[in-house]
Image 1 (spheres, rainbow, N blue to C red):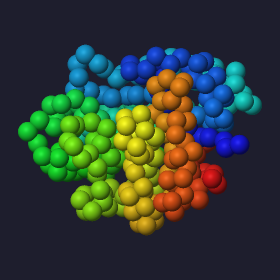
Image 2 (image 1 turned 180 degrees about the horizontal axis):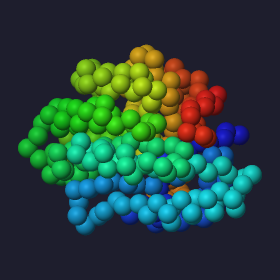
Image 3 (image 1 turned 90 degrees about the horizontal axis):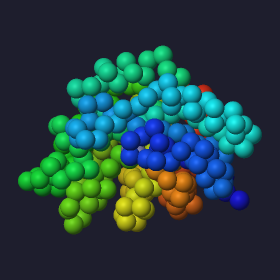
Image 4 (image 1 turned 90 degrees about the vertical axis):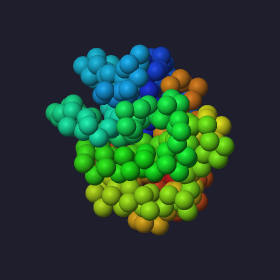
Length: 268
Ligand SMILES: [Zn+2]
Ligand SMILES: [Zn+2]
């Protein structure tokens, strides 16, 4: 029986999720998850004014502590966060994290140049190449100037959105920037996640896919968490067996967990 470590999950504390903490715990236990990192959203100054990703830290933290106690011995719960980076809010992001007891931080770029990447506006009148380069440059600048995180979330996120016929982000097309991103992460003891939401978005692959993961490994990448990005119990550990195969094919024998804020490696 395979045991899973799901390191990217959203509960009711994220505005786009209605999964209760209790529901998440029971769903996780049912799906052979032994450890789960709750990573609700904080997206400061998110461009969509109707949809704000604020995080009520006190309530969130209390709910996690409570669940952790209740499910002790059955499910290990990691207090995490997915923090949305944008060039102009990096100091605020750092200030938010300061002094809080997060064990695991995912840094994601969900908005670029004041536009939400899940909407149409960002892609309007832009070639795919221009859209992807602008995103990768923004991501690179953010991770150079913001250090307080463990992994970058869904590094090729743009593949989920936009209306381009071919949504791939191949190393052969964007290798220069991707290598800079990977090298920055590797040289500073941070890493990547492999996010299985690609299967929900009909991409038939993980985010990032095998091509990019192989390159990350080739450059010396070691830190790799695995996350479903679930917003409902049904999606917890979604396609994890398939993702484990991708991880192995890319040359990793281990995935990473962060029980104490430091990486620990689990053989798969
Ligand atoms: Zn995200
Ligand atoms: Zn997420």
